[in-house]
Length: 363
Image (cartoon, rainbow, N blue to C red; front, side, top):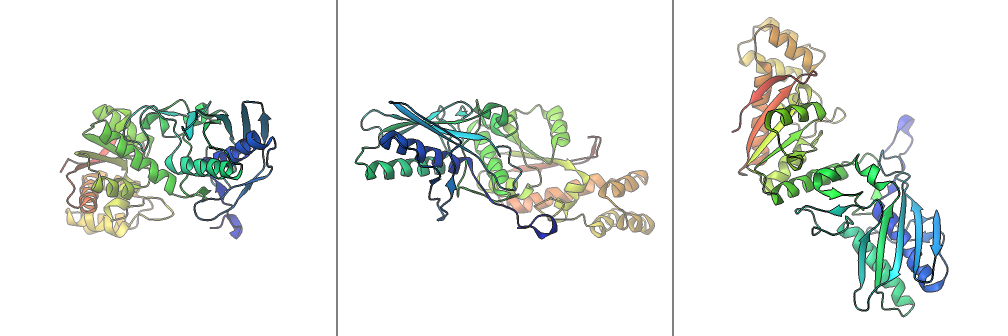
């Protein structure tokens, strides 16, 4: 993956990897009196990154180590965050017990991969930290019963820029990561949040969810239905992620809402609506218009339009409901992607002002 002028984009490390490094250093110090710096860890796919310690503190009953997260060239909200682990002795036979320190959230709603009341430290980071504790304990003949507190400086503020509040994670960030590696501009984190959003909605017993391409379409849905926060899936460009996950984990009703440009792509069968990965098919829009009775001159102008919004405006001026036609075709693509899943779908199309310009009702 490359950036401007072909420069390779730099990979980074997840909060889970950083927490594992901090845990390794702190636990080693509690057992030996010395902090390894830099500290090396082993990630699931064999990577062996080393982390410099930003802070260290050793007391008779506890040790704390901190590392600064480096997300590489990914625009990660937690890039530069200070991730800390404090290790204390635990009760005999308890193994590794996780605690949410300052800036790490707590699970407050069902549907996530952890029980309500648990620190928002995801399963893979938990496994990595547990394995690190057990390995070091074995090297020093220790039973490895520890209380492990993970914290992130300013994590509560950073969490406001994530999906955590909607997912029912309160008080801070989640400690994330499945491979430990942050791939620049990766779609995986966003798609994972969509899936967790569906899980939470189902656990809450919600019968209606909405996937919106942005804040303007989301406002329209909220004004129209007054849905709970848990019903709002942060779809963005990833219509396919919403539809494919709902195919396996259905919710009775789905509203898809977005601008004419994004939904014109969905109408053309694209499930990734990002401008770098799909384009508006003006020939298709012209064919749709012609099929609805547009004269050749209008179809020609639509085919040569600069934007989907221009095509919509031309159609509106001619009294042709292109927005409704795009909505209907988008719904058909959605239904095809859902296959036989018991999910009714409606599509709402908006213009830049947030006005409803196309609608295909539930079906």
